[in-house]
Every structure is written in structure tokens, then in C-alpha cells.
Length: 241
Image (tube, rainbow, N blue to C red):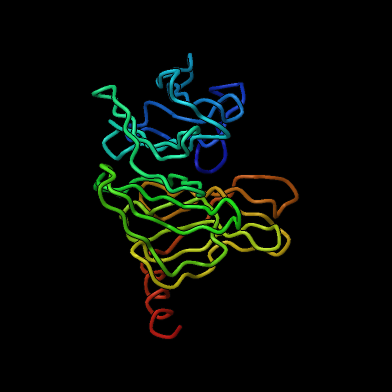
């Protein structure tokens, strides 16, 4: 559909979650079959494509996300609970990140294609931390300063400087924002009695789409984001915590 909410066109009519455009806009990758497989489909509709071998297990969603050049897809593999990368050019799959007792949820690539952001959830406490993992898996760095009730939905701004993520408090979800390299966070979309999640930036970084129950049902909303002002607000919060 258009960003103003008009012109909606159905391109797939079975169970699907977590859709992501390919960088060139020609394909959409998504979780299918109630989260038990990953498929892609032409953006204008058509026959869905299964591209992962049967030996790769997906359970409750693989959260697939494209690399900036469209040649690789990061996803959560179900049997070993590890973040894997599928290389479309080579037809290869490599595991790059896992930690015993934790659920690593890929949240997107950095604009240079060198790293993947991962929300690492403790399976007992349900609390999460954020990690920046190199696409080779050889390097990893924890990003600190976020809200303690972070749980998932990492969305990096197109310029790679800001990070939006989901927070769960009192069974309600809200969206917070922070500098991508760490530091204090500020509430961005928090509504009393409403659940907000699923953030997605516009390509130019001026808008954020998300889902919200503020109107009584899950709807898609779009808000303007003043990136320069947000950076100033975060810098001020860093100076005066």
C-alpha cells in the first residue's frame, strides 16, 4: 500500500509475519507457516519461494532480514537457536552467533553490511540485551544504555545512527529510541493502555511505521521523526542522566 494508507493490494493470502523488502524492492522475505518456515515472494505477488534446505529448522519465526546489498539474509535457526546467514550467491549457510540459555533475535544489518544487530533474550527472565555481531561471527560487541525492559523489535535508522526498539511494561508494549552505539534512551511511542511494536523506518529516515492498539485494534500507524532533534535530545539526556 502507499504510505498514506491507500492502494492496498494483497500479494499473499496464507499465514505470514515479519515481512522485509529486499533492498531493490523486487522481493519480500517473511516468516510463513505459523513461523515454521521462511519464504520469499515477488513484491507484486506470485508463487512463494522456499530457499532454505530442509535440514535448516525454523520454529516460531526466523525473523529474516536482508543485507544492504541484497545478497544475504540473516535469520534465527530453530534447532540450535543461533543466528545464521544465508548467502544467496554461494548458496551457503553459516551460523554466526548463539549463547546457551538465550534466544538471539536478528534485528537488521548495519548500513555497511558488516554487522547484524541482535536482541539476546534470557529465556528464563525474558530480559534482553543488544549485541552488534560481525557478519562473519568473529566479533561481537554489547550495546548498553537501553531500557531494562527491552524485549525485541530492533530498527536501525537508514543512516545507522539511531536505534528504535520495543519495551514491555505491565503487558503493554512501547517503542524507545537511543543512539545506535549506546547511551541513554528516550520514549518515542508509548501510549497508556496501548500496545505499540513492529517499528520500520522509511528509506529517507524521516518517518517511522509501527503497529498500535491505541484505537482498539492492531492498526498500522506512521509518524514523522525529526532525526536531528532526536539526536540533540539524546545528547542532552546523556549530559544530564
